[in-house]
Length: 61
Image (cartoon, rainbow, N blue to C red):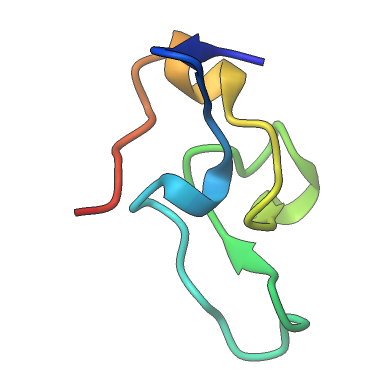
């Protein structure tokens, strides 16, 4: 997993995830990974290493 100052990057810290009707608790849709991760469905604990490496990760403010 990607680390910055000892921090692990997970989807929970990214602003790209959105809640959609029909998803389970703690499931979100992310258009950045749709096609990479099945149906673009991520959780707060999904590893965001690839997104960080591709400059897709945007920290929540």
